[in-house]
Figure 1 (cartoon, rainbow, N blue to C red):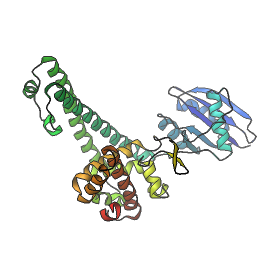
Figure 2: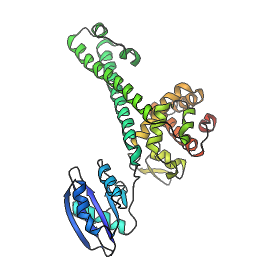
Figure 3: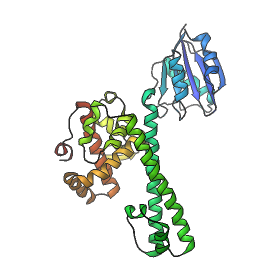
Figure 4: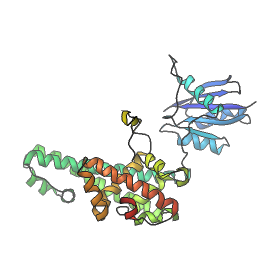
Length: 338
């Protein structure tokens, strides 16, 4: 008898369901998030279990890795694509786990990509760096706002990073305003130091794979951004077309159009937010370093908002990078932006 397992994974417990080939519930239980316990509960059925479907939540690493190492076939569920029968009035965790097993049995379960364990830790280290960069930007903007509100002046980010306590007192004589700026500056400087530590560690531990080397020919993409794109992309062959890759990088508009008219929006958060951030960062830098890209950006700015124009550049870069990676070729700005 073949069995199909569904696991509804939560922060501190999991609901496990086993269905047979006729959708009969063979096993149902809520278990603590403890790998030995879950493996022990599954062991009597292991030879019969065809596969296990696990809901893709923030904490799936330990469970997916543990089950795969124990010899189970595991599918990570794409929760954004799973659809439940709309006529249901009541659902709970037991129903959710059962529904996953049911879809698995019917071979219509929408699945996500299980990123290889070997590179996952270094990828997460790069994600931590991007978090520090965002925090650094947040505190820089906060200082600039303080200066603008209280003096009517402005200051570049590069000048802010070099500020001292004496500079703060000169900029904002008011004691409370100076204290607020000092707090921001302290966090900003700490972020700057942590980013350098993270970058040093990352560059020592991993290098660009052969198929990603040509990313360095793209204006605005250096080693760190290239590594981010490499580790967030994984195997480029999982994307059939450039459009699929650009969509995964959140560089495609999320809207529904019928008869030439906008009828609504789809889930704009589908995709990889870290890859989206990387291409927006690359767009900002490429506008500085390439006259061709800068010209494209300026033409877009004449018609649309700057934020959307930057996203248009990111979209072009994402599509171009797909071919650069897939075909192992250097970036051609004229093909991408004309």
